[in-house]
Image (cartoon, rainbow, N blue to C red; front, side, top):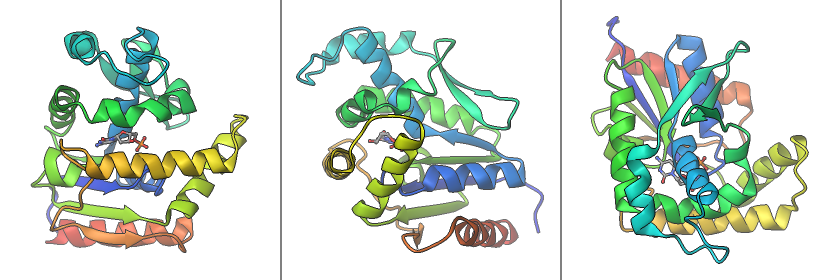
Length: 231
Ligand code: DC
């Protein structure tokens, strides 16, 4: 087995459980975990907070593009082993998961200049390898040479149910139908946007985890990792 660290790209649909599996693998193998969705969410939050998105969802695209150089995104390790997303030095971990951000993130992610800026940041995180990054285009665009690429899927209903439980556990007042509608709408925008759409890399390994427990999923991913480093 080679000692050298690799890049692990985990792509898939929203709420497919890819962040959970990516985070858990990273912690077991002492790799850095990067949540690229949190970066798109942070840019969206910045746009909302700076009135660059109107109430009807219209984005002031030129102003957002001009502001991109003012947006710094980092991940701060927390004492409990988790990490929080920092936007210009502010902890935004909770805010970026709220429905107001979820409802606007897909159109923001469809802007070419936003993708270019975040792709460049993501590649910098990968310079020293030893990372697990999850997202939509990590294996296809950000790290086309990643040594291990996984593409995760589960039915829209399963994914909406997971997100609904997550949000209600945090005390958010949401109903399942709205969450399902948000999942379906985001799938559609993510799959059909012109810039770097959600696409399975040709050399990705598929995982449908609709009927898997967390433990089965962890084991499956660990097996893929061990095979990849042994190659
Ligand atoms: O994984 P998530 O639901 O937190 O992602 C939020 C949004 O960000 C999602 O609607 C699509 C977008 N995204 C993207 O376009 N490319 C990525 N690599 C990651 C996320």
